[in-house]
Image (cartoon, rainbow over all chains, first blue to last red; front, side, top):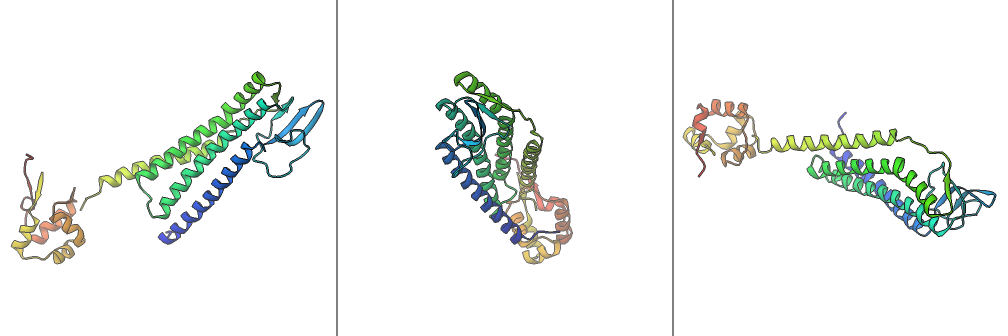
Length: 201
Length: 68
């Protein structure tokens, strides 16, 4: 089935707007996290277990108000929520949100170009390849680096430690990331082929 | 460089651009690109159609001139 140019433009505009809304939401989340409203799944302190606590009120029993984001579901923080703990956990969440914002921004730029009927261009290929590698870094950080780094930082520099399970399930995001990378390289190859036939009569 | 003598051949055969473009199945814009030496490449099928329409050989249309 052929998709008309008009339909493709509208679809691209729709996706771009969705990505822009998500980008704004991520930006707001970053501000909220920066101000200390970060969700903690479980905090064990002074013989009590608190669930769904957030950093501004670490021993509160549940969420109240707007919270930036819940960090890893499996984590259990044991010990006092000191300033050091807050800085480490907020930084972790900011890095993750920053990378997501970066991916969304690349997506907005890509779909803006598609909406202007600029599809097979070198710039689009570059955007896709960049998004693929940023996604790869994101998966690596989220699944491997940050969980270990956070545990080490908390154990070394604060009185608190991080318990709970360590999950490792990068396969679905990796599939998406490699999909984007393959698409990027296919675009780049297509653009080269197109350039070779330019000026052919 | 390759020099295109399409202009002279068309004048010799008294063929207009619009008619030649229609005869060989390319657009006038592309024929103009070819005539004005702005084309980077030519398909064998286009060259064959030009030779047939103008009753000439490829050598009558194209010539190699060494670069300075």
